[in-house]
Image (cartoon, rainbow, N blue to C red; front, side):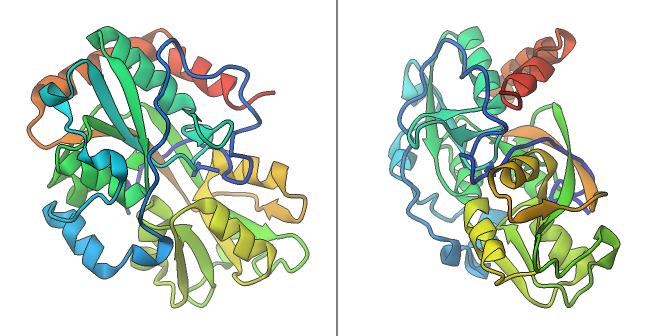
Length: 299
């Protein structure tokens, strides 16, 4: 069960920004030296995430659907290093003021850009679009709480896994249509972010009959607050932030599964992958990723 299905991660809520994801507990520090460019608007909506797009993701032929996607990555981008992300997944990526993207992954990306002597440019788009941008070479890499799955490995290359997360369940506190993680069934009306570990889990393992897929966790949270769905399954960190920002939501004890995250690059881009891995390993050895996470999950 890997959408990165047997791996994990940490993240924060979309509402606060969640992720998802919306900042996790409100970070103490923003991203390092390099200033992230203003996020490019995603032209896809939650409804656009269709089966056709899923097929396109598999063969890498679909359009990424963002303004920034026209910018060429790699050598053609000159002194810029282009990062594709979905800034609704706190504490990994979220917006501080609705425009500038910050978070754990941004801090990591800034370190990668610094090591390469480049300026980081962040393009904010739907999760599926971020993956497509990398496949098409329109972004140098994607970082957005990405799980490694066999299907993705067929069309993209991945860095070493650098973060672990738990997939948990958020419910409407008053309605509480699900009272425990073990109570999830195929009949549970579940909200998920399209293309995430939870999405694949509900389709492949839980066999959810009424699965509601959203472009951003914030949309799922609003439907949950309005009692239109039974629960939301998502990463633990963004879930915690979502609950902190919404008194009418509740996080159930336990976890659905665990997940690990990696950075995605275009298939065959060995040079980029090696540079990213070198920085990631150094950050992990020095405890910097944990430090970044604390900065974005504490007030």
